[in-house]
Image (tube, rainbow, N blue to C red; front, top):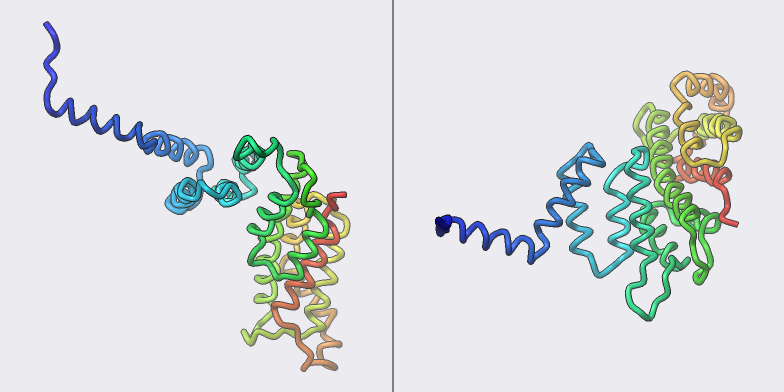
Length: 252
């Protein structure tokens, strides 16, 4: 005897057909799979970024960027996201384009990542790792450049936080002698690291409270003689960035 088909069964089938036809079902499954793989601290923002990348499907650089910010660069899933972004940018958008990631597209992505970085810092970074517009970018170069850009963002935030730590009276100004002493300590801490971006930021993070107190003691004499000469956060961050960029491995 044939099974009886009810109206509710018909409605359920219509719903499934709609989900598959509109690809919503596929995207929801994929989003949940990526959510479990990446395990973000903010799952709601993660899902928002994921669906934003789908909405911006006409711009491959935007889609690649959305893939890259799905998880922090310190997580293992970041490597997979970088590889996926590279594949997306390397696949020709039409038969008129050849396979491979060009320097111009790569630089567009790098500038999107660093768009809130001070212009002078961004320009110096591009001189280090920015390719020529028409050369093809291998995966290894892409991985290094993308990781460097994201690590730089964290590093600059560390520098901003460090200046706030030195700004005991919350005036926005810190004695220049103290800033110079801390920058010198930062320079000496980072100079012995490798050119790997993660080792650079880890070295910077080791500049802890005890180091700052030592710098304060060393700079005390100079601070008395030039107490009105100060350094604002913007200048301190740029000077810190210069130390970071000295260690960045050039593309060529």
